[in-house]
Image (cartoon, rainbow, N blue to C red; front, side):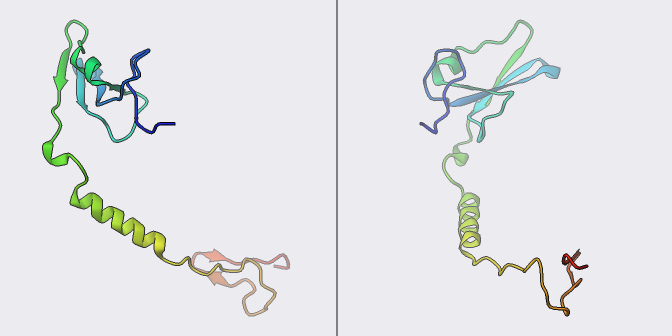
Length: 120
């Protein structure tokens, strides 16, 4: 199974390169770079269908050019990835026992929670 998104047009199997959204209040169709995530109310289009796009009469088509600086990972993306790797590498905290028969901990508060045992 391919992870690349495909064109939303029927019977088109080409890879998507742009995302089309509609702003109904402004009667505008906005065609921009491929969105990071597939949205249910947006349409991913291949290069061919992006070039052929037309809007209903009275509507405006707004074509947004991709930002050349946004191509590829940014330093913010790399820092976020490094932070995620560090977080995943941290050892998990020791689990807190849910039930204890020790009278010293019976009904003890842990933060905003209270440990209850079946005899409480």
